[in-house]
Length: 549
View 1 (tube, rainbow, N blue to C red):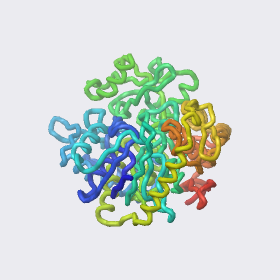
View 2 (cartoon, helix red, strand yellow):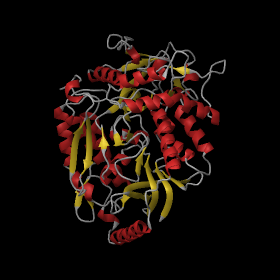
View 3 (cartoon, rainbow, N blue to C red):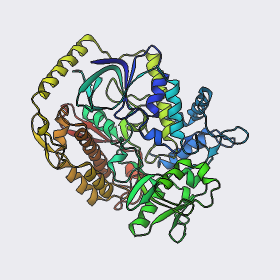
View 4 (cartoon, one colour):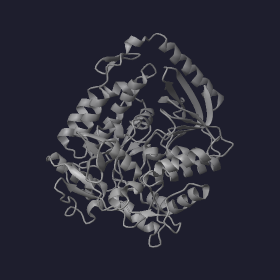
């Protein structure tokens, strides 16, 4: 059994910022389901938004964030983050993290959708996430232990309802337990629940399902941002085309070169993401392919090396037109936290995309995600360092955990591999019953069809019924120790998909990333500021949904 002061589950920008800033007296373990740098943060082409320019001000950044979020944001959170953004950039620069500069050595500030100022700081052109990740890893050498390729499938709760650790499974089937004073979820969002996505293969909603299964509050799950421009070939998406391309002059056009955004929104191609994504979707639905014309961008290959490589790898001549389509990109909702990262469960924290602080509201403003990860990692580290609060790993809790682990090992001894074949159409043998699981690709396609860019009561009800046909209530109660990692992933995909679908069905309006064709307008009187919160009740068996103001 492993013990730590701080256990971090996930390895993106938020996780590494936290690990870097924790005191040297802290024993820190970072667990990741794949490799340290294999996640969304490393893929992030966009930059970090910060009001650094001479004509800019944090209040303008604040206002743009609220506008993009359709005023569903937590204002105090938005104000705190936008005010500290310039300082976060300055701190990284002082540590040696290099961003793109002009000929005079000043930070090069880009423009992206729904921003009214040039305020996007980039690194390596369109490789900002990779640049920051590389920096955080290099300055954190020796500060934490990394355990790769271990899938966390359960949060360990003591009899008082406090989180005191987590259980993970290695590729060889070995189960390990980790105890910690502070357990931090930094697992990212849930883009892989959809067939079209910009997300890394590892991002499938695990952390949200883990927290919900343990009894934490989950909020705003209906708000999924679909990035307007993913490379689109033969009915499949193949990677992200950064919004910065449109910020530098890229135009969305039909195959005849006709612009599609001019009469849709005053900001044209740089309109908020949900508007651009819905417009492209409507063209494609009617049989018209949409392209990104980059002919007006000088030195495109130098400015956007990642996009250029992506196009060339897929045999697309970027000098002509790049075929694009929207895909799942970012979750605005998640595990409900305060501005420090504390969840509704003592001892459990969440930072980064898995968390919902209220910063993004109903739709995230471009380049506010890396910013949030940097901000929340810093704030949680400061709180842990300064408060000295310990979650209370007393000897009784440790002894209880050891006994529980022994019981788990005993129960696994009687289960044979053939009792849970990996054919997703079969029954999965559990400790007390047999339950079916859908195939991952079926979840992804049905979510794209019914809970995607445009939703309706009919499609949402159909999806909810289909998901519930796989006995979600039973999966909530079932120990997962005996399942394969692939099966565990599908269980979590099932749970998180249900949370999104149920929330989308309940919100009878359109707002930000949530668009209902049967309720196409915002209904401020009924829904302004109202949040849909999911939380399991005290006996950990039934699902309780609450709407709070």
